[in-house]
Length: 224
Ligand code: UDP
Ligand code: MG
Image (cartoon, rainbow, N blue to C red; front, side, top):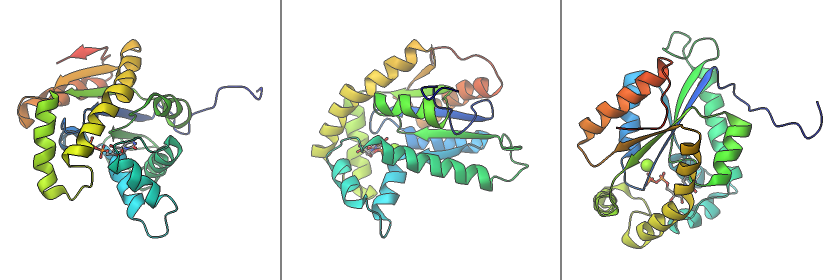
């Protein structure tokens, strides 16, 4: 093998299914992931939650840096986030009960929520960690997302659920995350779901698309 050969991903995508869950801040990614965990036994990894946990971890060399990026709505340098995701995937695969649906013999299924938010993360994760099989893309209006985030901010304790941070997050989303959606659309990997409806209606649509994927049916770019 020559030194310039393409890197081999850490996890084999024929055994480990990765579904990216994207959509603007407040679109309902976390809520719908929790539903899909119940349906199909996914391991749900929220990139934002992993970063917040690392920020609060005693002795972390990245804590202060992560706090600043999150408050400013900016994307933390990808090496940190990708390492956190890779470690969490490794831990989940190592501790999975052998009898669990989709988890026997080194297999596994992951919902990766709020990632990749930027092109560099998408390319590096697919090449070096695990090739993703689907992007669930939840869409709704900025007005609706703002309303949900301000409501969430009353109890979330999150330093970025305030109007100033939210505006910055919307801008970063449009400038940096929308190109990621376009990239995966070109690969026919995107399922777009209108997230304006009720939680249960959105859940039914998401459940249907993901069920087809897990059953081996091809889910080209679809809008439901
Ligand atoms: N974030 C990041 N890289 C990622 C995911 C999240 O830097 O891959 C940071 C970013 O600052 C983002 C914040 O974490 O604004 C919150 O992300 P989260 O997914 O928790 O927000 P949500 O979409 O749930 O509102
Ligand atoms: Mg979230």
